[in-house]
Length: 459
Image (cartoon, rainbow, N blue to C red; front, side, top):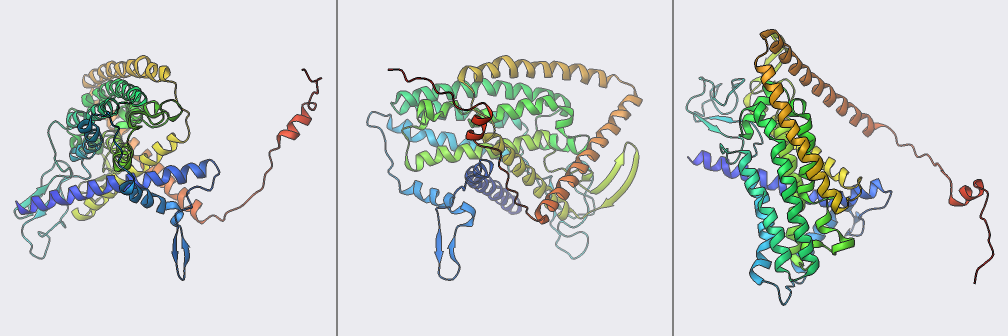
């Protein structure tokens, strides 16, 4: 019992620490990354002056720390006619569910710990595990099974949707309780947008439920490890879920509830100090948790191509090319690093989208949700059902062909990962070349067009 309690506390610390710290890094990347994309200097004003080293800027990372400190010391203003209780409760409702829904997201496969601490193959993590399932080998004496998720609930994804929907309530309460017309307008926009895109988000996953045969997130990942990643078996659902997830975070191009050119700051216009900081930080935490969901459902979770619970097995159909057993401790570490690495990659991609696409108009936003994404998600469910029934009634030869195709997708992913790693190292060690290239000026363009046409001045 004590071991399970310690394991739970460790998992809570890892998940909460990852979400909070990555959210803080994303606030920095939004400044630094956008500056690099737009050819600007970026954050460079926060400085620590040291006697010998001089000015320490840390590529703008000190701005994130300065913002955090600033939130605690700014005035905590409350509008005179605001509903004081609901006004203070809204940021809590927005922030707490984002952390709570990480409880059911698995960071790795089940861990087997032997209670016998003798020296040899029976002690600790060291013996190789069974390839499939959640059990432990018979060689382990009195094993303790620790789940990869904090709370591996049978309802799984339903728990996520239940808690994710609380953000709608928090945004609506914040706008209504502020006694501000701009805040109320932003709250109405946020509520209608989040409700609209949650429908698409939920229906887009129905096809995945049909394929995986479960709503437990850890079982979904195990299915992908034994077959193919969800992005290959449900590519349309992946795209729909990704778009809906970006809309749920209310970031560009879906930041209509906070459009500063129209609504000042939307539903948190009247918030200041740490209350504003909670809204601000919750938005970045939503980016992290939505990336975790995408990784878990569509990108194999903690899985890597041909790496299973017992080690490395490269096979195509019934033909096994390589089979090697690895110690359980290394497979656990690889699984955790893989899951968080994929999450970081998707967080970066969402930040890249935020600084690439322009903002929609509000009517375009709602039309996209109800007239494009929702019909597409329903069509995906219908198509998935037909294909699933066709495969279920197919011959053994056809099913074997799909088995080989699934293994080929694993090989494709492995090749893409290797290519990305090689390109990264080439980019790091390649010498930088600065080439000055003048594309032209407005004066040159005017001359090429025949010059400026001068007309008589009119009174």
